[in-house]
Length: 153
Image (cartoon, rainbow, N blue to C red; front, top):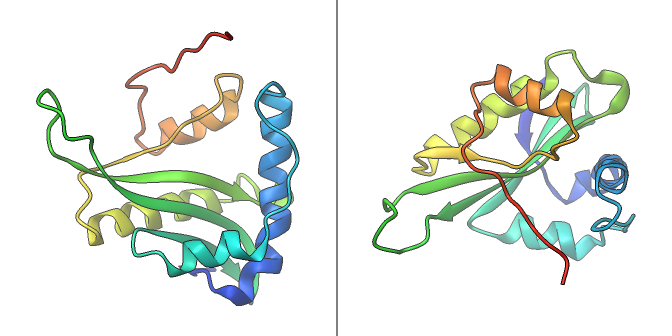
């Protein structure tokens, strides 16, 4: 298995993986998520950006997982350190291949991506109901730093 940057040739392989993510979103938070379709321009905008990429796990030419990473600057306010963040927007490994180390290799690649882009730390979000997901991230050194709360208006 190799981890590499995605290209336009990977778009069709990425769509079903994004669909898996969207199904999880609908399952965990149906009040916020729907099943959508990722158009080519969604991917092309990422590929053309200087501040984000999709890293793919490739086994014998087949994309079996991905991580969408972004380099973000911390907000410029007096009480925050001026840090750079590698933000993990999305991560998915094909359902039948989970728990085989692919996700861990993608996380390692995201950390390396962040280091190469001058990031100070890595951040992501997990649905509170996604206990397996939280355990996965904790095994890779992540820890809870803040809780997001909301109320309907």
